[in-house]
Image 1 (cartoon, rainbow, N blue to C red):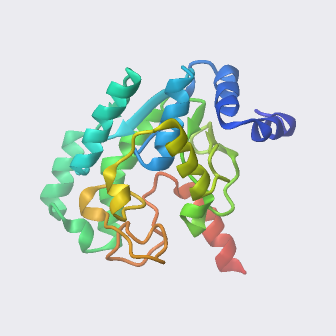
Image 2 (image 1 turned 90 degrees about the vertical axis):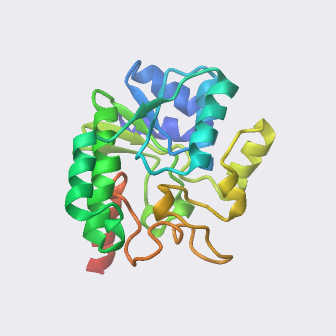
Length: 242
């Protein structure tokens, strides 16, 4: 287990130094999950540019925007490196679609969460198997559920560390990095799409709307799919208890 001193040291390092440091502490056991959003593009650039010992993977749910697939091609051409792709189990998708319907996630929150579980959470579980550190591109500004997330936390249920090196970054800091390093990103971001997921579940947001308003826009919920719900659930319970 990391000591408080090690965690504090990690938090004081620059972004490239922090990722390099955690990779050196857990050689061959650090993975980064990218959804190909702007935050994740910053981390992809840092990892590939500095040739860090971190495996980058993404989850292809089968319902992504075409712009997302095109960006994946651009990434691999730009950095001359591969992003590992994990897919949902075909049998799981077939069962869900045949029993619930191809677009049944519009009908209820439970259906939507089940779809996310089949297409995203289960592939994520496979991708994280054997890892000791899971790097994410989460930023506190993205959602109220993420305001209290630490930079690094121990996930008892997964038996690994979750490292959020951008958690305190502002939108402006992120964009400054993208411009300075000419980092490729999805053209959907320039059309009002802040958080990009599956095509049927994502829309552009209006000026002044919350950053997560474009995800699962037809429902009122905490706007999490299950990938990052552990800490969010704890925070929600704390708020409800007050």
